[in-house]
Image 1 (cartoon, rainbow, N blue to C red):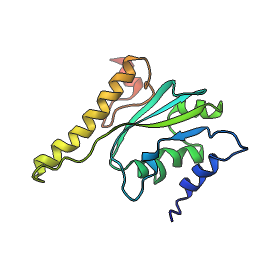
Image 2 (cartoon, rainbow, N blue to C red):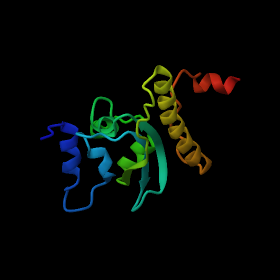
Image 3 (tube, rainbow, N blue to C red):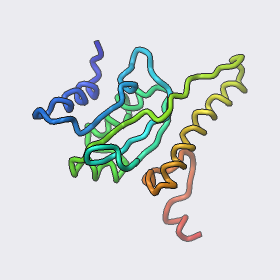
Length: 157
């Protein structure tokens, strides 16, 4: 039996006052015995996923939600870094966390080059979905990984 406290919190959210949960999570995120690897999106809306506020990638979707610095860990503590998501939670909008694309491992001959190619496949899939939603004017509240200049410095250039 899984004793993860954030998972327990999430399950409690499903049964508050007989109303439908404000956080709706695809079943793939709950698979901790056989975790799914892939690209996910966090959407907000009144009754359906209307606006994408975040796209991410994970080697293990369960851990990305329920462990360490996971999204649901931060939401349960009231300290998520995405301002649009925090605003939606405060306004009691629904949050939909959806698997956008499963990206299974492709190990080839298990060489270092195969590893690098497979890691890039995952990163490229994430970037593809970020591009899709940003072209729609969504998913504008996240920064890419890696070193980047500050917003203040960027404005000066």
